Length: 216
Image 1 (cartoon, rainbow, N blue to C red):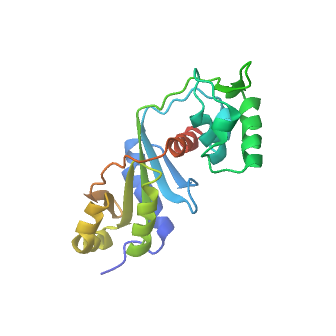
Image 2 (image 1 turned 120 degrees about the horizontal axis):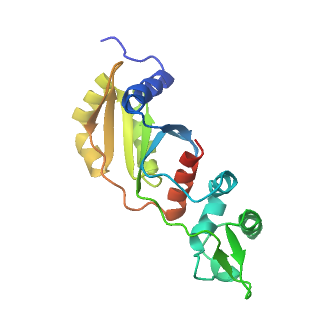
């Protein structure tokens, strides 16, 4: 059987064209959320955020997003309490605090506690991540499992003929791990297995993904 795609980039471009662009949906390629990028990401729902471009850029950085999400608008938090459990160095913490304050995302009150300057709640959105491979199931599956920490729905994307074989062989494993499967031909893309929603995304990671998408 003749190969549908010779290169992964052709698979990705065709997938985006016939799965998203025909429906006027905007995607992100090479989303730099984790080590190594997620090949394609998509956010459905209202993506409007109450931040200007500079604030969005700053909240796209992990340490800044972690701190911002731990601070609440009407609940002052001390520097010591804020720093605990963040998993970042003190120098990184101090740099992030200065950065967040410089663009008026957070401020200090009279007691030297920190509060948000912006009242923000997550919009009702769904985040999808797609790992595209020509035929490397093991690598795609590994990366799709990792992506579940960063997206609501994690999918693997293969040429249609390869995807159909994968479905027959690995159906139960994909279902057990809530991983979806999509097959791509030159003219269309077909969901062969629907992904189930991941309920365990950390709030700061979801914020980063939304900020990444807000920049396009």
